[in-house]
Image (cartoon, rainbow, N blue to C red; front, side, top):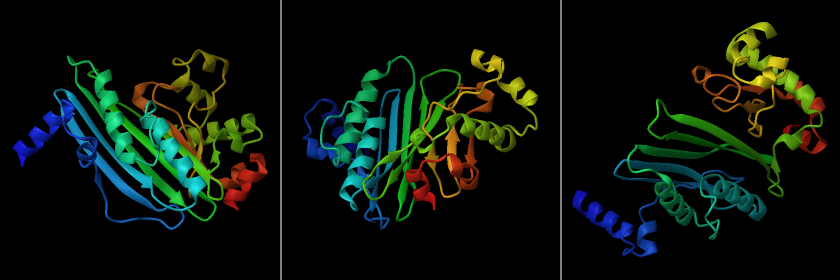
Length: 260
């Protein structure tokens, strides 16, 4: 078995093995999960020298056409931005991503990528996905980051910062929840002690909104700061989940209808 896999891998690298045979290396689950947005799990793992790559995707295979296509396009944009084929071809996307990431790596240093797309929750109003990346490029430590997106079931519309009518009010709530949920501090002074030395903008006692778009979970809206965005690596990726009742008055009518 080992020798057979080695031969297959060599043929792929030489471009001898047909695309259909390459795609067979991507494994898919026989089970379809979900009623609103049916999905199948696709996995792939490969390595070459110091380059390692793995991915796991909950990929839409049914349901509302607009919803399905929007989620598929979101997945493609996040991990295979140069892929210009059919967005329903997840196996083609995965192989394109693998080849691209391999071409970007320097052979002298370890280079590892792990991607995970997860359907976090779904109901008859919305579907929420998350995208998690764990990468290592030979430095002192790995880097991780996470993104999410919420899609309206009826037409596939994606919701992010446009959920809110007053971002300043939302930011104040996020700051208080970060203090309580993540940093475990009681006062602004304690919070500034954590973040002051890291961002010049915070020296004015102003916490920026996360660069990452917020997304809806079953318990509330999740706000996520990437590593190094507002604090040193020791604090990793600060985040909080704010309950719907604290945000409703600052949400657009369309966003409120998703959670009511």
